[in-house]
Image (cartoon, rainbow, N blue to C red; front, side, top):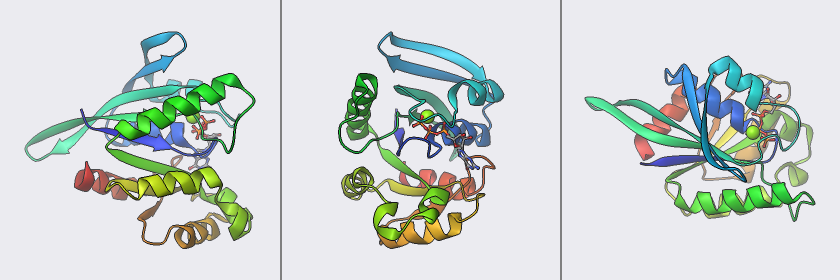
Length: 201
Ligand SMILES: Nc1nc2c(ncn2[C@@H]2O[C@H](COP(=O)(O)OP(=O)(O)OP(=O)(O)O)[C@@H](O)[C@H]2O)c(=O)[nH]1
Ligand SMILES: [Mg+2]
């Protein structure tokens, strides 16, 4: 099955995007496959349960890979694909072993994914100066991503103040890349994301 991996620093909105994009594609009941220190297992949530249990402003809330199978209309039928939510990327070596392990897991998974969605918190970037706006680890991911056809930068949290400034900084930092502004919270920009999937997956 083709797959899309969602990458980005902690708290940028990867998990909320994963859940609400699934909802946007018409899925009401989400079966997540978790792969962590307990092995591989599944859990099924409604959309509101998934948001309640899996999304948090607490940093490094997602501790390991979890994925859901989605599908969308394709030609005369539907096409199924996997959407992988990951633990937040960190600069350098994190002191927490679980966070370090999760980062290794993310980097392995990214090699196998067909498309990469690289999420940023545009509102946070809007508050900072251009030099410190985008971190080293994000540049490394972008460099790896640009070698692949299906690499997409998502400027998230466009509903918040200063996000427009952040979007501009992202466009300056990643010239030549497709940057789509979205709000994972309000599901804006999702039509454009869906078109990208249709074109590249
Ligand atoms: N206003 C606003 N808040 C958002 C948006 N997307 C996510 N958030 C909030 O940002 C916080 C972090 O969201 P998560 O989806 O848990 O972020 P994450 O990238 O999965 O974080 P980690 O799992 O720690 O790596 C939560 O409080 C979300 O409600 C958005 O588009 N707009
Ligand atoms: Mg998360």
